[in-house]
Length: 195
Ligand code: FES
Image (cartoon, protein in one colour):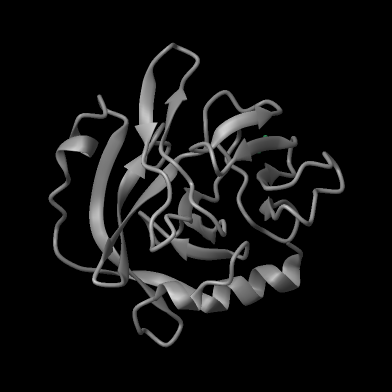
């Protein structure tokens, strides 16, 4: 994604609005400290109306901000079902990533702040999603999220697992809940580096 596309994506999905405190499910509460609930937030479009599944173009990475106004995240419709997987950490700990949401279970969300040294989308450096038909020019990999700072590569179909490069922990995922066709961010799953 170049700068122009990034700005286009930014304008499509705006900051989530804060609503009622979240009561999380047994599944998430059993993640042995790998899930952290933040305030439940409705994902909205630039005009303030709730984001709907049909607003998402497959393989376009939309930016929203969560759990803080300065923390960019990606929302991506990967176009086909993305199944839950176990994500392993270097210390042997494992947590279950929830897979995609939406009618096709194809929508995923991740932090856009690299888990290595916290690069985030700017003019100079960026962490981008490369769709299956548009491989990265540097690593030649596609269908991945790649950080251009030190070429850390993550797999969005596998809970943000590290595929290549120096990151030692997976990309943190944003847990998205669908209710009546609307999407809510409810917390962060993975190694929480937000403070
Ligand atoms: S900061 Fe992203 S790979 Fe180093």
